[in-house]
Image (cartoon, rainbow, N blue to C red):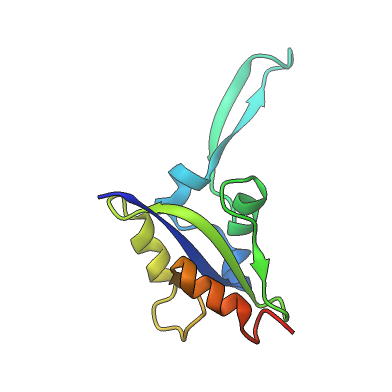
Length: 119
């Protein structure tokens, strides 16, 4: 199986929440604390960011917000094999489109061209 370049339309509350644990290896990073000399690493702690932090760290495409700011579309490459795509799909369980929806490029373009994103 391959990685798939997809768009995800997230509710603002989801965008500001931490990413699913299945995405941590791809979108997360390590935080380091140093000894007093400022050069020797004392501890390394894996950090699980919010979607917003991951986007602004450059690990996702530039976010595009709806006019009311309640929906944010981000682009990313996610693996079906490692459970990344399934974790994103699970975010939208029981929700109405486009809340926490996985989109193709064409679907994302159509959504952005619609009334939720353009005046």
